[in-house]
Image (cartoon, rainbow, N blue to C red; front, side, top):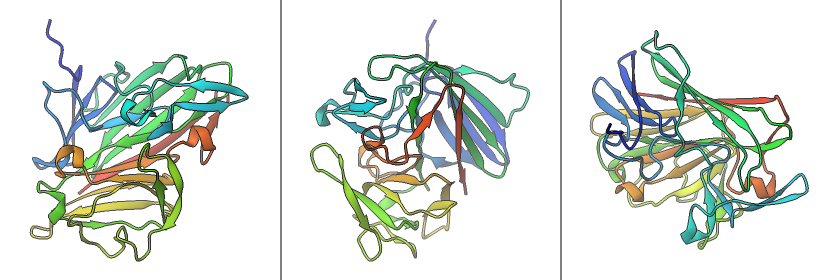
Length: 294
């Protein structure tokens, strides 16, 4: 039996959209509208690379040195970004997820995974992703603490917006009050700096050009959006969410063909700093969502 590097493939159709969800990481391998890509995808015969379409449980972004202290206990996570000596993007990206729904609705799908305790994260979570297509794609992420002790928790996603051309020639529009400065060596948080009137100020929408971005932003609206537009055709891709943080990455890892827009419930290093960290008590759940549209 031959198995795809991304596992089982499940297709959704609705509202002019078509999405492909995979069992490896519960990831979103593809999203198109009327046949054109809205999110950067990858082939069925490929593994996800550069984080394309992945979900980040139980923390997004980086934990410096993979070390943190929670409830008085020191923890050491595996260094999954060894070049920078960091633990990156959680523990479920490469795990096998199971389909939870009965498949009767071709526009909706639910997948789940049980995260067992392991070195550096001795907690048990049931995590779930609900995908639904209407006039947009809505992705809802839920984590439930099924263990016996409180658990630190954060969530993020890693979709890349695309309009089918290099992002250098595209118009970017978003509003954020602050950008999180990071160190050059480990991308560890240094402090917040205002976005207004900086090279990262895209409030009115302008061409990205050669600007390189790989930063977390906060000071967002209660419901915020990031829009990428082809200035010639008017074609656009939009991500909307209510998370207090987002990471923008100009996709150097994918040849600047798409813009990563990563909704996050907490900033990098939240396990160390506690900033916007969710603490799930036994039996508690946390839910957040984001939408992608044209």
